[in-house]
Image (cartoon, rainbow, N blue to C red; front, side, top):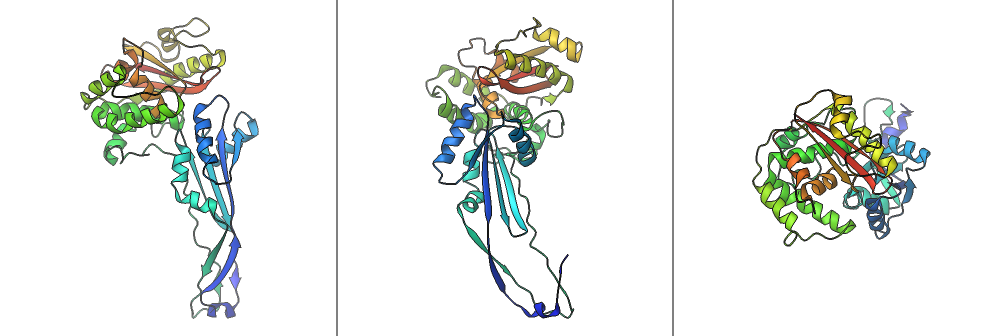
Length: 341
């Protein structure tokens, strides 16, 4: 800590201007429609930014350091002012919107900043050079995002956030479990906020859904409105290993469905990794890499007459789940969910 000589204690309201060094990085990957949608929003914002693809190993390593994970798209903001500064990150399907609505977007548009330091009279003969504490407000689009807007209380979010403390799931895999649990906790509130948000996101990326005319969406509304107080799903590490195997396999081969390239089906994979279970089921999703996108797609179950994915997520028969989100050679991303009692 630097010591000032005595004469500086008489300086009151000393101001100085320093140039703020700001950078904004958008992390993306190939075959990611959500990345393209967020990049288009950044292009129209007027804010200077860099684009870095995590298909490049060095960029992926950098992203892990800056953002704390590799969920794309993600935006990293950093501003250095003198010896201090601030940083923040935003991840997921609406990361550009989250960033552009934040205080950091305004900082990114600014240039130099003026800092005022006030030193008051003191009886001591030295002054301490104490910089204002610069809190690193890292916003990782965490599991409480938009909870209040969705009408769920903090206590309900905590109840549904059963995967919060797991160390083997990514943030989006944790959010996938959170989204399923919120739907099970109160389907009506989930539909009225989260499904409507899913429709908005889907319509920006894929074929438009009209909730008033799409028969599968109309039936989803009816089904969710009848859901209240189902038991929570809890993460299971062994089921996750089974899900990871299939998600990795489909991702590399570009395949779809429930049979892996080695010929194993879901029951054989669960037996291999998790041992004998009672009731079990598997859901597979393609195209989305966010918790809301994946769960919204599976609950919608468009063009799936059996509604098997929806029924599995909303079934009281299951209490454990393993989740894996991985890149996919054809669809950008795929997610596998393995359920058991």
